[in-house]
Length: 494
Image (cartoon, rainbow, N blue to C red; front, top):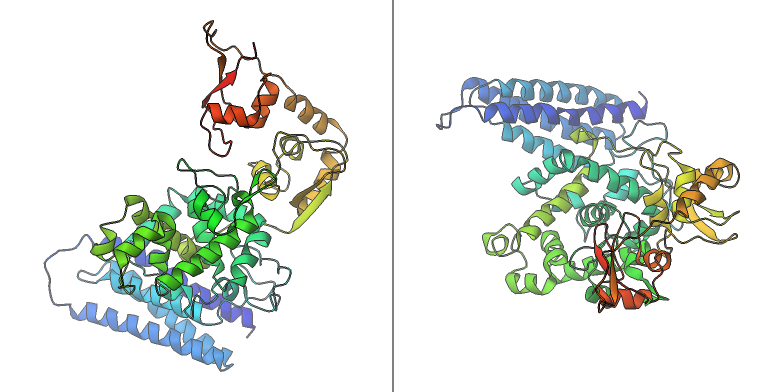
């Protein structure tokens, strides 16, 4: 029997997740009075145990090269698991939590085996990620195994407790935050060639990097929080300095994806060492401050983040943050098992040499929704060229980083023809400013920031006689960052 057929059957085992969730809902409607399990319930539990045992036997058979025997064992295991899970939902007194626990156990067994191996034509929830430069053996290493690299001697899945907070976070990512998760995944695929090698060199799992980035910024390289945290991994200024994120020629390297990932990996390893490889405490330190966490934990680094002595003392933000990161990492590893399908993304890096001057905004207009990108390419182009002002025209001959798949699209749409002319016309449009007449003694006018504005474009377009630095100082701006709707004071130049 073809090897990929065996793997496809293995993945079918995990399709029972939905059945288990239905069983959980049905079970909660039963009586709350404890009763001894009926003979029917005992039989269902026995069937569940047998299915789990059969699955483990199948793994052993596959490792021994007996794919035919494994297939028969898997068929039996799958039938038992599906039947028992479905019947539990309609059987009074049947505890569906047992079925969820087995489901969780099988997923962890899957992470610890080579079941993630896939042949190039194997159906997946997304395309195999391209090997990275310098990634030793990446072409032959299964994608799932590259994602589940060891974290201090442990599989990442061993360190994620499937408790109430993590389950609740899984539901949020699969419902209200689903769009954010998809955006983060797409953004990450285009940044992966810069960020993943930094984690790989520190021996950290790729899924953890994705989980942190998804929660922190959603993969928006220029994100800045109200507290001043900046970049795709949201470093505070002082912490960034400690890990070498400085200003280079006026550019804050917290916005550099590769540098940010390097600093984050170093920080995570530093905190793992301080907290005796406790991942939950490490993430809590990243969000709430390592000093506070060390004071709370003291010498008891084996304490759980969810211990009331810790959990009750951290902020609500940190209580939400830790399970959210872990849940996003878990979904990165197991999308199919939660009825989730990430989009296919060709993140291969390319570049263009401008044949005519253009800004990132103009390129976004002429590229349109090429290659099935309904939201356009503005975010991706900004992420790949973090040092460029998106409104500032770049000269002929300038080299910009773009996805490889857009190189031909640029040549076809953005060099000649109507689209670059339209893009330039829109870009150079002048917006009239009608500020409230200032008092005779008032040396400033006020301007409401529009979407797409940067401090540089505001200073240039609206006739300010001052510099960006002075305007930033007048308005107490952090890192020269402005937001749509914000009212700025500008020198009146009178």
